[in-house]
Length: 233
Image 1 (tube, helix red, strand yellow):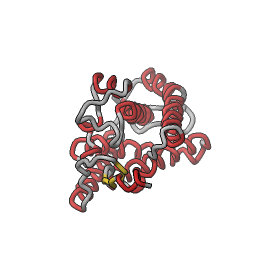
Image 2 (tube, rainbow, N blue to C red; image 1 turned 180 degrees about the vertical axis):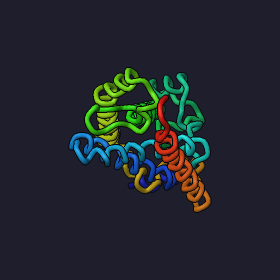
Image 3 (cartoon, rainbow, N blue to C red; image 1 turned 135 degrees about the vertical axis):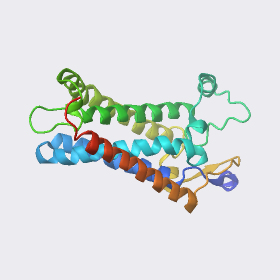
Image 4 (cartoon, rainbow, N blue to C red; image 1 turned 60 degrees about the vertical axis):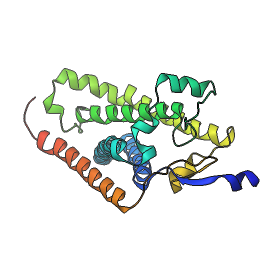
């Protein structure tokens, strides 16, 4: 109890970051389930894929101008910092306990990059039955065939593997290290022994995030609409 009383509640994850996280979980879930159902559900698979692209585009922008601990500059660590973390030799000024630790940051970046590759490959995939990506006419049939194979095999398995590692890390921290990773992603606040600068999470930042999400969504709509409606590569 005395330790809990000394901990301070600090806003680490701003609302836009939290909504992005859970929105991505929902979009990926819909994409996976609809792909397994097939048939008419493939319409929702395509829509979920567009949502994933829009959310990832937003996250890239938010990683530059978003809340303090959501910025790439705050949680993308170099090899030296990663080595210090693995050896439990943090220096003064290291804030490995705030937000993503160096190992967690690598898993997040891998997840974002792989989902981007998977969603992008879906744009030029063609199952030769009833479903084709909106940009399939922009590439050769050989290119489409290669990326269709990736989308339905390695790409899919990679998503499952990374999701499994993500869930395993959450459970490991919860049961072994006694650290709650889900709670802060729901409330935005993390209990910390030492004070750190909190993330700004007021309405100006939230309205900026909404504008960036709209911009990303319009970019995806233009990509699959205006570009995809053209004829030939």
